[in-house]
Image (cartoon, rainbow, N blue to C red; front, side):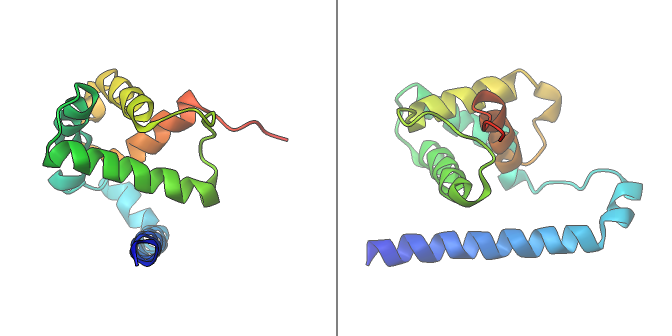
Length: 131
């Protein structure tokens, strides 16, 4: 039952991402002219950052769980996308530390989508070897 729920959740995220990318591609020229699209506050790096810092500090709360949950979904989706290739011994704590450091080093990007910045952080930290 849990496996089905996780698989369903991942499938929903993949479908929603595909729909978002299709819409973005369709309206990309209009969006480029208008500037970067605003990210809903609940998805911004700034919104996630305190929960991620709580997780790194060992504090367990809703926002720490939300941060780790988002990172786990990105890791699960990465099995298809291969945006980053961490060593096998990397755990959630190391992933979240890497993401927090990356975001804190770029305060001007705090209003961008946490999920995109987290993927970017992990891709910079653990790039996939080409060829």
